[in-house]
Amino acid sequence: MSTSVTDQRMHPRWTLKSSVSVFEQQNKEYLGLLVDCSEQGLMISSYDYLAPGTRLQLDLVDIPPNIDNRRTGQGVVEVVWSDKITPSLYGNGCRLVESSSMLQSMIRSYSHPVGS
Image 1: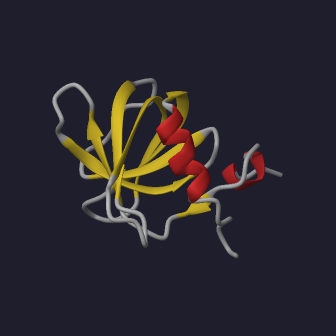
Image 2: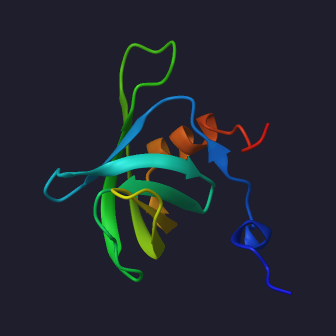
């Protein structure tokens, strides 16, 4: 009997109530959107395949509901897997290696477990 990825999760995933754009920190290029997250990882949708093992320095930018400013959090992730989720999009599972206090705060603010 195989164990699904969901069964292997150590932390609950949180679905997002607002759009969170993901940019590569160095060149400020748009990478994709945050799909869901946990305290230890992120799922990012992108138009490009991200090779497992790749480390990326990211800026995550959101405009939370009922707040006038956007927030920007920085983090370093390592791509764990990348699969096509639509004909033009990849889903990329990433382990969070480092995160700024703002990114940690942003992730906590998304704390609505998937399915609830």
